[in-house]
Image (cartoon, rainbow, N blue to C red; front, side):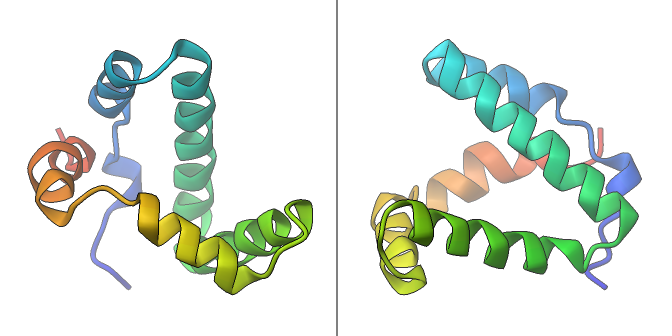
Amino acid sequence: MSGVDWNDIDLTALARQLRRGQRQAAAERLIVAFEHAVELARADEAFLDDLLVAVICLLAHAEASTPRDVLDECFRRAMPDSRWRGDIAPLLSAS
């Protein structure tokens, strides 16, 4: 177990930040994705690993690619660690 109390996660601040930084439709899709992921984590945190694998495989299939190619592209587009630690991770902390 990670020690995260998934019932304490409040996505309000994160949603507000996402809406400021992205096009509205993209922000809303990402917010819905976060809501579903947190819902699964609340049921059983182990679902997060399974969800990641499932999404990667579905993307690989949709793109006629491979899971490794999907992960490589995701890594290339990932935000820097400093931005994650300073701007995004704190928004996931219990309020």
